[in-house]
Image (cartoon, rainbow, N blue to C red; front, side, top):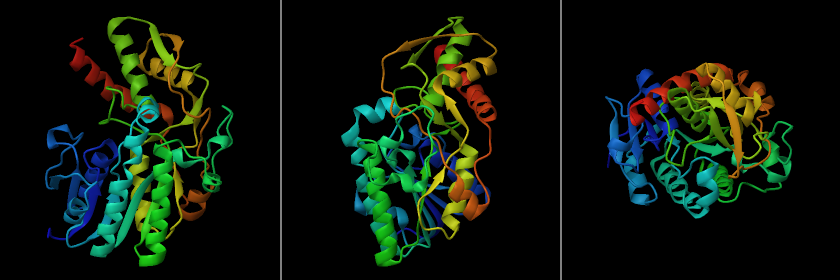
Length: 327
């Protein structure tokens, strides 16, 4: 049985997990980082961390990951990506119920202090997201349920499991509904990237090649809010250590159209572009975060502006594109 640690991060090889591990280490915590991917495919590998490659769909792997116990367990492990991936891999997304379930079981047996589950705005009812000029989504809008097919339903089901593990077994579970987290050190190509990284990649290619025409799925008038990674990590730790047991939004309330997202990044890059609208997976028409409850409970909400966050993200993605394409 592995020794106890301050924190276990499941899905540590992913985008959010890598940033979370760095933040926990900066606090002086002992951290066990676990991911199904080989170590050389992790987005960030940190010194001073116990790094394990394990498939957390397996209960024995979860038991090993949690070990003799931990002050905090952060479960970020799931199969996910942008709309292109979610629309075409619903069964794979649903299979994330295995690490979701087994991490809860292992945490219960080891009597961990706090268990954090990363849910998603994809749990919200589709019938409340049919207009671009969307009313911000309140936590209560997840019911009556009509979650994003596949990915959203798994997240909603696992939220309920967290609730019942807390009620029935006393496991102190905490839940955040992430709203479109973005930033450096994440997926930016290959099909799993989300809109901010895809936008940065396309604008970087335009800047490097001089090709002004940039393709975008749909009419570009669908709306979203995007949350910078530093705000996400701060909120995640705050929720985990706080006393609020119900799921809470963790998202920016700064709404934008996808067209405007592209024009913003083009402005950051200092170039002019022409958008070519093509068919592609779009998701809901509009989605924004209502931050009434997070402000009520914690007196805080994500505050890093879209321009500031996208500027940092674009700088990093630009370097990746330039290196990959030798431009």
